[in-house]
Length: 259
Length: 283
Image (cartoon, rainbow over all chains, first blue to last red; front, side, top):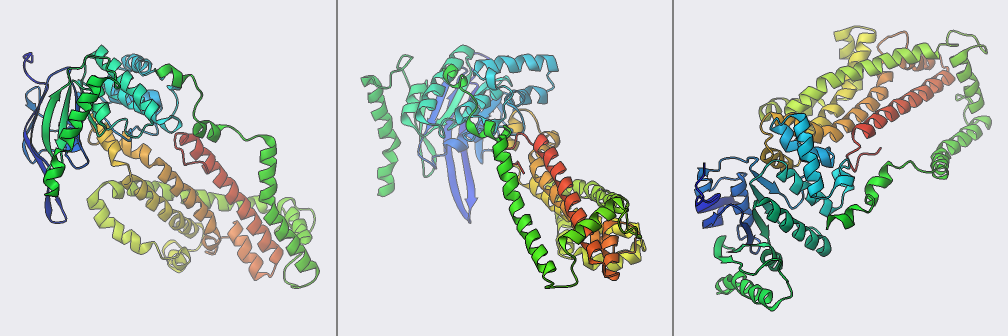
């Protein structure tokens, strides 16, 4: 139905402002971003740059003050299963086992029981949690919880996976492992991923395009295609050169602010 | 990748909470639990055998009377071998009043917690009624429901009602907003969220309310049975008081304490079973 050239997500002149104690805060100003199916995009920036706001607008949790957010050319008006969100603090249902958390989406949409069970087993396996399928979230480590959150979104046939600093609360080792697993899943499924982070290295390691955002008001500073071949070596000189370049862009607004 | 982590056992928190503690541990905690009652018993014994007061019977006399109250065969008076009758009468009022309170407070709490209009209309009224002690309701309740068991029911109901109501409201209002977002992006929206998100998320708080409510139902049974009922542990205590039979009063108190304790343990056991998933719900 969709033409091959139509972007899966299209953000056109999107602005979002809040009222805070009688003051108007521009969380996001005139953002333009077009995402093609299968792309891995990272949004990076300091706090207050609007990266989470942009992600929440794509998810449908918030509406733009002006401009429009489209999926397959149609306006995004509410949260929907084809855009799955992975939260930093997991937001798993604590009363459901790993298996039932993953089954939540399919059963909500009325998928027949036998079929839902099949789907659940497939994704439990994909994220390597077979032995913990009956455990409750509070019994799992942070890394395992985030795997459940990812599986929960994938089991619901999400086309776009939105990730809000998903690995921010994890220790460095677990984070690296989950980054690699995520890339593996992405390569296998050809999902579209929009990934918010404040870690430059993570952004470069994962992305096809790194979108740099700056605060006050939140805006997109630049959109940078990552041409490094995968798998990427974070210790290579090429990687370092890009890291330096991105770091420069991230801090470009500091001068402005000080003046 | 995933294999390294999944080959290890569950992290400590989960496993430790469910594993039964070994026998020496249990004996130790039982022993510690008996220290204060034991000391109290010794003090009671000393105080009464040394005649610091003549109005309170010694522990031995009380124990003897307890046997008579439960099984008879020692004094053979009007109260001998009647404990079970009074206990059953009180239990029917406690559980009956408690049950009615659950039936009323649970739906009301869900309503008030979930629907702003219901909150604005009903919450101020209940906040105003809440501080009025059950004892104060006694005369009105006797006028409205007459002398006898119906009044007792009503008073127990009032005692159990508020903790259940308030904790249900609290539980429903304090569902993590992220869970609503998670549910709606997974395709569960609007009213469907009530059963799949609100109710389970509020369950720990509702259980706290049930536990407090049942505790209070036992707590107010004596007042409830001041309404002129012939049977019941509260009635026995009131009779003991009028007849200056302190041993009767003490026996009634002990039985209420034990019955309340056992019913609390049952609620806690049910709660722990239903709330296995909750890391902070092990009473």
